[in-house]
View 1 (cartoon, one colour):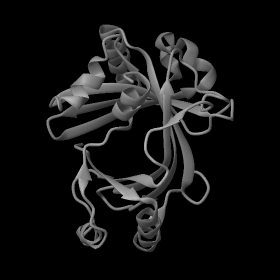
View 2 (cartoon, rainbow, N blue to C red; view 1 turned 30 degrees about the vertical axis):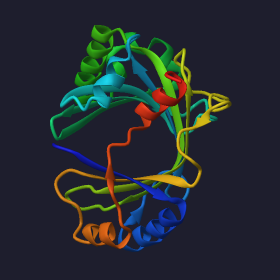
View 3 (cartoon, rainbow, N blue to C red; view 1 turned 45 degrees about the vertical axis):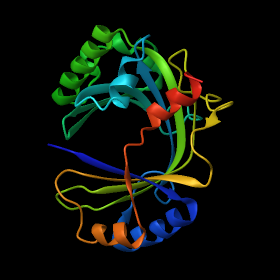
View 4 (tube, rainbow, N blue to C red; view 1 turned 90 degrees about the horizontal axis):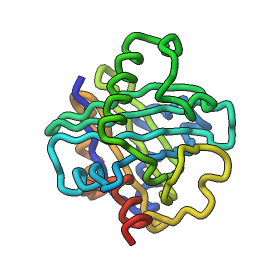
Length: 232
């Protein structure tokens, strides 16, 4: 199913107002504490940063690979391998979960480790992309997320990402201490607001766009991390 994402950079004051509004018209994500949790991502790229430049140049067909964890301090927490694909205006995300102790040898994981045939097929596609592009650890990003959901057919999701930071990455590691030494990717006064779904947004969304003066942006956490930690 086609997925869309709209991104906005807002002030922290406007983010707090958006949070209050969204709490009235949607439900807080059941994950984390009151819909809030930390997100640590490790992005991969080629040695010549092909994925980065494809994004910067707005290539209509592109992919990127990342590992994601929601509790770096918990050694038993699950890690997700995600491949995000864009084909013109269509977005797909293919995601496979595994235990943290499996990620060191993730590319050789046994077939019976998957929860479904869909996960197995997705894993094969992710692994093929990884091998073909000869991907390597590139950059980390970390932020505190506040998430809201609408449980209708369009599965709309709204997120506010605070305290965005990043650093270079040289190995596959998503554990305790990885966030030490990260640099801010946005000023602390700025927050990334995203609206996501599969077909349409709620009728009230156009009202908040006008009410809060929201301006769409192509902002990418991955791109910003590369710019500020690898290209400076």
